[in-house]
Structures are given as structure tokens and as C-alpha cells.
Amino acid sequence: MGTLFASTLRALVREKSLFIWSLAFPVLMATIFMFMFANLDGAMEFDPVPTGVVTDEAWDASPFSAVAEALGEEGDDQLLDVRHFADGEAAASALVDGEVMGVFSVDEDGEPVLSLAPGLQIGQTTDMDAIDRSILESVVGTYVRDADLMTSIARENPGAFADPGRLEAMFSSVDATEEVSLTHAAPKESVRFYYALFAMAALFGAQIAVVAVCWTQPNLSPLGARRALGAIGRTRTLLATLLACWLLSFCCLLIAFLYTRLVVGVDFAGREGLCVAGLGAASLLACALGTALGSLPKLDVGSKTGILTGVVCLLSLFTGLYGEPCMELADMVSREFPVLASLNPAKAICDMFYSLYYYDGLEVFAGNVALIGLFSAALFAVGALFVRRQRYASL
Image (cartoon, rainbow, N blue to C red; front, side):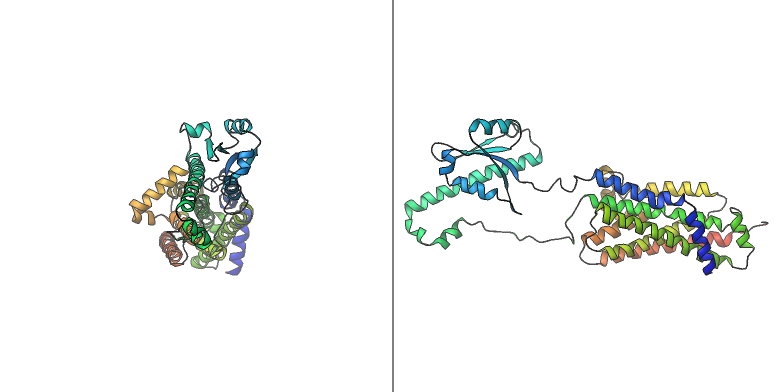
């Protein structure tokens, strides 16, 4: 049996066409995704607001200048990207050209003045522009409010300035909420597409088993005819063949996974070991699917691989692989028809990776692996049923 396993594995490796969908496809698509989604994850990340300041004498004499400079200091909490202009004309020119979203200046009375970009003034804004406008208005509004409060305290209760701690408590903002993480890793939109890609690549690995099972059938392959006349029984032949198929499918997925992790840089939330275990389960499902299709009677190899391609492409539609509208469709089906969604093997593989990325516990991951195991057992049973019923009048 060991010799049969080794010979089958060597024969499969020599069949270069098998690596198109099993290895070249996920590597190529991962590379394409890397360029397509280069800006997707950072689209909702906050960047400091480009802000101009007019550094004239009034600005230097105003306490507001210290506030703006403090908000523009580099760091994790940097709010403004402060750019200095010697006069109002230079600042206005930068504002019109779109170099800055707003300009801070100080009038003759020492009051801060905010000038917004023309697009922000007339309301022709994107969501991020609206956020930038809100930030700039909040900076000025908060400063004016606090300055008025300080003036009122100085007029009505000057003794309060003798207690700096009390003043600090008055002007400090109270956090009414506590930030907690509901997911194992920070959510990224792009990872879902990579997980859907792995689901499709895993199922395309079933082509290896389709070809190998056809090689065991005497009516489809000269190799199958020779093996049928040999001393090794059909069960042992099929077992060695499927073991070789699983190993080759797993190796292809593993190479694609390593490329995606190390070259493309996809985040798997530090659970790469469990992801590899999941790849093993996905490879088993691919072998089971290939066995079921490969054992279909009265069809040649080309017809069986064609059926496989159509089935995999259809199942992958409901993982959201084909774009944002398909992702919304997949979410809708999962939400409105959860039982129907759970019957999709591609969705089970996709959700297996998804659960490792988002959930702290492993219960959901274990459930998806168990579901993949059930799919595999059912497909292996179908394949065994077809194989057992095949009889040949002559070879």
C-alpha cells in the first residue's frame, strides 16, 4: 500500500495541470487582491486633519496657538496636521488649492477664527470631509467655551485659581464609556475576501481527487485497468489514492497560505497554527468532494472537472468572493436563511477562518470544523456507494 501511495503521489505531481487551480490560482488571486485592497483597510482609519495657521503677532500672543500646536504634536493621538503660513493670503491660497481643510487665525480681539475650505462651506462633502469639519469646529468651539468659563470664574470666584486640581477637574472631560474589544483582532474588511479565496481554492483542490479517482477506474484509465487486475484490492487502492490526494491538496493550500501570510501580509490574528489545522480539514473536504464527483458513472474526466468548476463557482458566490455586492448577498443569506447558508461547504471553510480571526474562544471554530467533517463523511459515503456499484463486463 505504501508503494501504491508513493506511485500515485508521483503521478499526481507530474500532472502539471492540477496545479493551475490548486496552487497557481490562489497565489495569483492573492497577489491581485493585495493591490486591489491596498487602500481598503485604511479607508476608515483617521488621519490628522490638514490645518493651516496664520502665524502673525495676534496668533503668537493668543493662548489658542498653544492649543493648536499641542493638538498637532506627532503621536498616536495627533488630531491636527498643522501647517504654518506667514499671512492670511498664503493661508487662503492653500485653502482654495485644497492643501488644508481649514485655517485657524486670531482676530484683533484675540478670538480664534476658523476658515473652512470652499467645499466644506457649501456642503459638498464626503463622510471624511464632514468628520474633518466637525473636528475643526469642535476645536474652536471647545476653546471658546473654556475661555469664557475661565473668564467667568475669574470674575465671580477668583479664589478658585488657588486650587489647580479643582480647575483641572472642572475642565477635564469625563469618559462615560469604556472601550472594550468585542473581537479577537481589529476588524479589517479585506480579510473576508482572502478567506473566501481560500474556500474556493480548497474546493478546487477536489480536482486532484477527481483525476486520481478516475485513474482507479478501469473504463477511464489504462492505469485503472492494470490496477484492477493486480493483487491489491479496490478498497486499499482507493485509500492509498485518497491519502495521496489529501497530502498534495494540503501542500498546495499550505504554500498558498504561507504566501498570503508572509508575502501579501494578511493578518490571521496570530492563530496561524490553527489555520493550518483548518487547511487540513478543508483538504479533507476537497478529497471527499473529488471522490464523489470522480466516482460518478458514465462520465469522462473532462465532464467531471467541468461539473466541479461550476459547483465551486456557484458555492463561492455565497461566500462573497466576487465583490462587495456578493458579500452583501452572502451576509443577507446568512442572516435570513442561516440553515441554507450552513449547507454551503465553501461558506463553512470561509467561516472557519473567520471565526479564528474574530472570536476569542474556539467554540465557533470547532463547530465549523465539525461541520466540514460532516460534509466530508457524507461525500465520502456517496463516493463509496458509486464505487461499490461499479462492475465491468470486460477490461
